[in-house]
Amino acid sequence: MFTASARDADTERVMRRIVSQYAASIIRLAFGYVKNRSDAEDLAQEVFLVLLRKKPVFADERAEQAWLMRVTANKCKVFLKSAWRKHTQPLTEELTFLPAEEGYVMSVLLELEEKYRIPVWLFYFYGFSIKEIAHCLKIKPATAATWLHRGRARLREKLGDDFDV
Image 1 (spheres, helix red, strand yellow):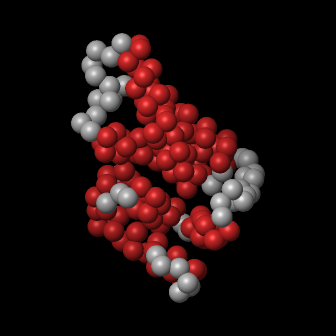
Image 2 (cartoon, rainbow, N blue to C red; image 1 turned 90 degrees about the vertical axis):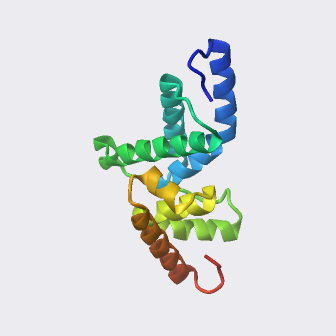
């Protein structure tokens, strides 16, 4: 967490802690949006640059995590809308770095529409509550609950009874 009078050494120490603590989570969330690991890693770097420039003060680690996830979601949405992205052909992402069963579940999750995929992602991978999902996505809690419910239902349809969603 940054203080109003953080010196360069303190800033570096805090940034190292935040990067080591949240880099994997930010990349995972960005991957959920963009479906490409390289783009997700680039977006994570952009999120950390925003953090370094703004140096926000957080009440606690949960607020810190929520801010980082919200900035990540916003960066991903801007990336997906960019003119450059619309004129490129995406590479198919191999999920071979995951165990076979997880790779299958992940591939099915990535096939969901974004509005269902991201709430499921935030709920299961980050343990976000409905209220936190709503705040992160800038939607009403009732909408977040509906999207989460529908996302789970679609996963159940595609995965069958073998998987507990």
